[in-house]
Length: 283
Ligand code: SF4
Image: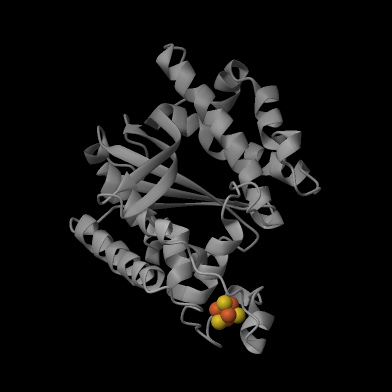
């Protein structure tokens, strides 16, 4: 097992710091970046030495489309398990793993684990890559970190495809029929996750945007978050599609997701460097 102090000297940490800050032109929010830098460092301290030992990194921030264009996603980290370690048994050596970073303001407790376990996201990753294990890594700005390791069931692919296909067909029916608004899940969805929906006033006053979602959108696969939004409230998803047409992900950010992206950029740089060091035989 590597010790962090032995391997960290091979890393360009200045490049990591700059990655967290990102491109000045893309910054829409002015917030203190220090907690984001600290979260990246916490992940380095907690996991980098172990990951360098247990994983062979093969890809970072990898886009994929699955089930013949029904679903799409981005994996933070993918590779092969090359050594056993504590909870990672010998039987997993040689298998593919997928890893997803989760920045959070919430406490990383059993509820956090249960929500991730219940999500379709890791099942989509597992299905696409035929992964033996999926890792969720949580970090928040209160010094907490937590890891959840999940082993996909044998029928993960069939179940996940069915879920995405059914919701895609529902969305496409609404688009093709030029429905407007889409079904509004009032009031159950309007205060979901403790936040008032930004479209609530429109829905209450029938003041919603009277535009159709373009029929060309029928060909767009569903991401995990689109699927979740569509299930929560179709009208919310319609408004999201209309609002974000033609904008890139940075423009579609809220401040909270922008913070998450900053941490992700830093960790992507760390693991790109790890992949390079592994390929060069340094680690
Ligand atoms: S769009 Fe928002 S406010 Fe309207 S019904 Fe859906 S969740 Fe509620």
